[in-house]
Length: 251
Length: 120
Image (cartoon, rainbow over all chains, first blue to last red; front, side):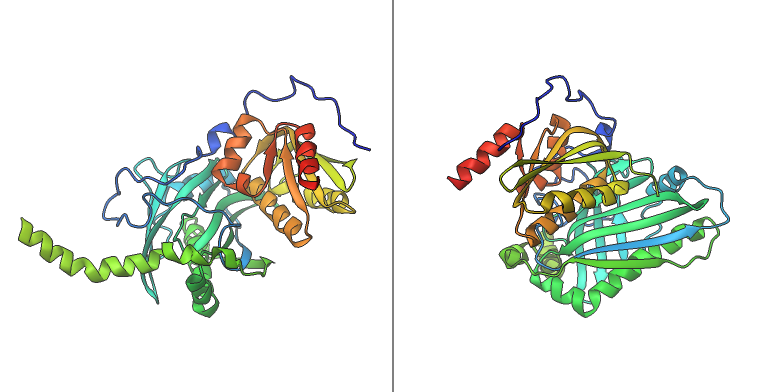
């Protein structure tokens, strides 16, 4: 027997207090102007992808640092984090927020150097409120999913946290992650939290807990490899001398 | 961590179909109540309908919980449907592309009708 509760026509809220925190849906990313010396590659025209769309195993990784003996609210921590987001990154992992900054709907360009070579890509600011912000990856990024930067109170102390929920986007990245990439990525987020803690004059240990939520490889997403940003970045880098030559001859 | 401001109610609404009424805020703090509700709803059910009519607030950690729920449903061979999403939250499902994994319906009647069509 089916039981269907009576529908209340007026029960749907007309607005939600989180409305301004979310980006609007986009079919494909668009970068209007690359900030500074950032290389805008493998972002324009790409679709965003979620943790269900990648090829590799799905991991949730949570990094935390306790800002002990410092009186600072979670909101203040996140405000500083957004303002100095690029500065807290390690030198081999350059993030370039747009002029508007870390706000919902903005695109942050990434130019990184890995043992496998350079990779230029970006992320969409999917969500941002006073105490957190979340970045969502596009096709071709090493990961398919999102990463949330947040701060909260715990036992009379403010804790800064990075939590990623993502899979390797394609088989090449999955192999890379299993060999060395996973460790390198963990070092990046450890560096970010360490830098954030040092901003407050704290030398703190970063705790990491990780869970494999889905160990299965998604072979239906094998062809994500055609979007591989590292491959295209390498191609761009290798052909740069030829393009410069062609450019100088036509001028 | 912040205390959960959410209430989950589990109902059986059909032959091997359960519903979870979600009221309040879906944030990271809602993980335990959501998993507990799903465990209850998923017993003897191959379809679980998430009723978001009472949803007041959701952040990105909350959306992450839905991903975890989906993974669990997939591993258990269960299907997730969603009803009662306001226009705003439907946009969020589009933004996060969760609408590609969870079918959205206006109400439970429509959701149940789609199940009946699938099984006929």
